[in-house]
Amino acid sequence: MGKTRLEAFSDGVIAIIITIMVLELKAPHGADWSALGPVLPSLLAYLLSFVYIGIYWSNHHHLLHLCERVSGGVLWANLHLLFWLSLVPFVTEWVAEDSRAAVPTALYGALFLLAAIAYTILARTLIAQHGPGSKLGIAIGNDRKGKISLLLYAASVGLAFVQPRIAQTIFVVVALIWLVPDRRIESRLQEAVGSE
Image (tube, rainbow, N blue to C red):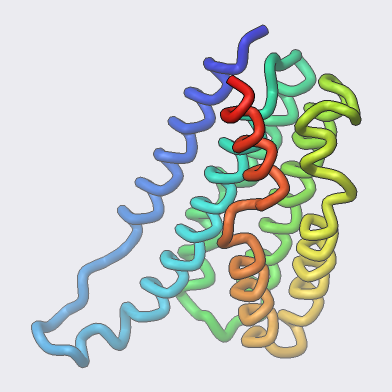
């Protein structure tokens, strides 16, 4: 089965997720800079969540670009990832309501832990289909960045109950780790373009 429909569907779902998030933002009440104070937590939560969605979209694109075909298992693994990402607007709004609260912060971390697990499952399903010696299998390798991210997300869930700001700092650190597109996949993409 070709990958075009999977890419188009995923792009559409991710676009809807971003749209829902931005629609949750409320305009400040007032016309001076101080009016931004009450909405600043919402803006920061939106910014971080937007960055995360962008990271997932970018890496998803690169992941599928190295694939030639998809199977039914890949379709379900992709839906699994999209399910967790579709909950991002919900937890973003909850964290924005009280950024100092432990439970919303822990849920934010748990959601991104589950999304990272789902992404790992999708990548492993694609590698199993194409083979460990495929361009994708070689590019992903042992996925050290992915494993570190999983550990940091898991730590953030527990740390949210100790000090939510520590957990939120971890969210920013993980985003910074992934902000630059995955160089392993980037190099394979450049090789593929060069050989065409």
